[in-house]
Image (cartoon, rainbow, N blue to C red; front, top):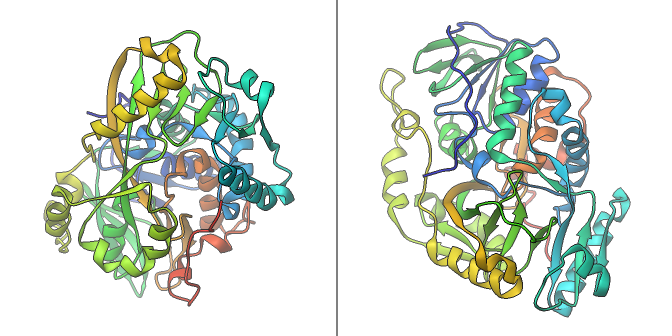
Length: 442
């Protein structure tokens, strides 16, 4: 069962008209709703389950520039500025704190890779740097052994996934947005080749624009519109501890484990080097697109043939708008955590940091991450369907980048000057001959 997420009271009425409808109530959808509402745009957010029910509440809670894909760096820089003032802006607790993040360099190859990344990041004047020796000990005290070096960024931080999106959604509502939960969007109404409404399980909402921020569901939703989004899913598992004294304050990633301190004094712990990739029908459909990523990261991607293959096969067919949709049948994706990989992570963590040997593990969960062939998101209008904007495929980077992405989506919808150049995130990169792929060696 997933983590307990801060709740948002249900709306008491159902709107039939809006300027913009947002599909999905994760960190991207709620941030978009907030920035649109602050501009006086009439916006309705529709979430099929509860706010942040899926990956937006199940991620590690990192907010980082370090080791960010260089194409995302401008957006994460802006996003961190928004995070800095977020608690005051939303008048609530998102858990954001600047505590620093450390990436271990265990081999000379790791050091070389981080040096390559630092060269990519240099134009943006990011305060990340390589540290070693006593300085590394100071930031990560209590380690049983010492690595060759580490990549450290002091201004990176953390936030609470179970608090952030609900707090942002509540602020969006106070600014005039309508936030509907347990309200799935079954499809879109179109007239004359453009969007004119969103068909929900409760009825039609007339609108001029729709933002699809459906995370792991976006591929299926867009397929019903005749649009091909080459998106797959990766399962990531997390455990959390009760409050623990004496462990490092900064977050850490290494090849065996990753952790970060929680606002409640406990720790989130995950396997630093394993992601499970369920084999589904789309795995074969998009194999050529994902082959470069598989080659680049083959050691950490664990292919798994399991029940999701049959489930997605059964969900694939279009469903008439007057019938119950797959989105209503599965309100929240709640996969079982991968116990073996979590045990491996905890074993490695207690060997390196003996203080964790006494940790009380109080919960474990997993989430499905929406991933793209080039490991960066789609944040883009769709030329073939005026009024549609896609914001999905954040490839495990969406929580930290969420506020900036929401601001960028709001800019695109309203025609304002974008907070960053959105060219790298265009939907058309998958059809214009660009051959998208991850940046190697970082």
